[in-house]
Amino acid sequence: MSHENIETTRRLFKAVEERDVAGVLAAYDPEIVIRDAASLPYGGVHYGLKGAKQHIEGAAQTWNHLQPEVERKMDAVFLDAGEYVVVLWRLKGLEASSGSKLDLPAASVYKMHGGKIVESQMFYSDTVAIEQFLASRT
Image 1 (tube, rainbow, N blue to C red):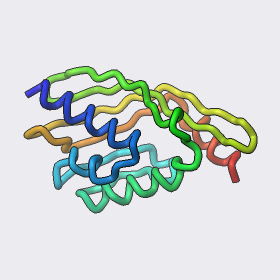
Image 2: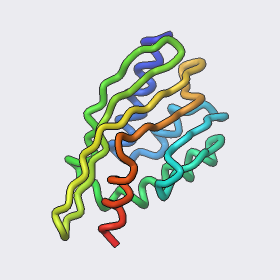
Image 3: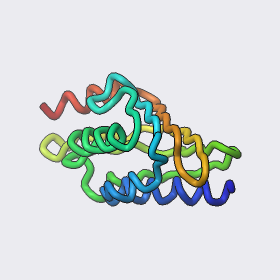
């Protein structure tokens, strides 16, 4: 089962990098619970596939114009932890007009069941830096 769990999270990250909403949703259990930093524009707790879609849309609205193709690559490392998968990755952004860049380590923990993600929790090394980067674009 652990190999299947790793593959599901790999597909999730590939879908995020490719901005493939259907691919992201396919990795989630219908009862998914997503927890993201409340201070982010798309943060908070999101329930079910409807909540997951709101989270995806909010993140896309925030990041799409700040992540040209090279910044979308998250350099993810996948760690098998039984019923959990831990992913170490990088949050990157580029504000083209100013040249301002963001490149911070992050981690996500995914609880798995039946080859699907049932819980998702993101951890960022510096949410203040993310907020400042996002604020600098307005």
